[in-house]
Length: 172
Image 1 (tube, rainbow, N blue to C red):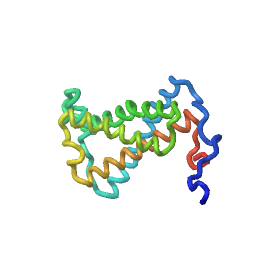
Image 2 (image 1 turned 180 degrees about the vertical axis):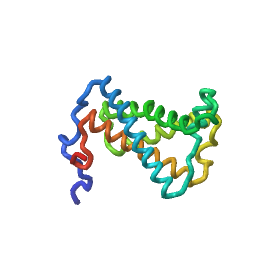
Image 3 (image 1 turned 120 degrees about the vertical axis):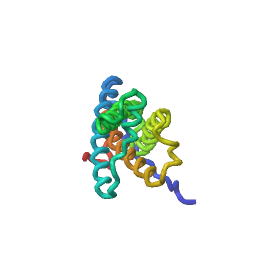
Image 4 (image 1 turned 60 degrees about the vertical axis):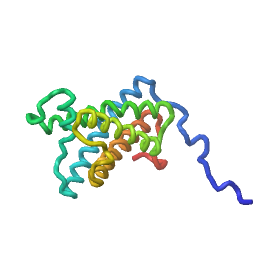
């Protein structure tokens, strides 16, 4: 019989514990949210340049509906308010995950689902979008790609700053 086909990394390669206290971890999460939304915004504009897709005002309409703000006065401002607020609200959750030893791309993938859920619950409850699986496939794909970028960038920042995890065995 052959040896075990599954190879596990040595015990010492896993984080031994957080490098920061809980409050600092939450602060790292806030910063990771800012970085994640910034990179997501740049990725969004690059994607729009390539695909020719116009701006979506669903995030701004959601914020406008929830806070009873006229959407017609500042649609771009409401879009930015929504994106930056959601980044600041959700990324600390990823920081708490890292603080408790949940690190790496798999954890960022799980976090992507939490980030999507937060957006979809707000958008559906504000009456600005139908259920996500009823949207056109292209819209679903674009939304998943944007949330992927946010989740993995903010996850990397959290993992590196809180646990000292180096993806791919090196610093970037």
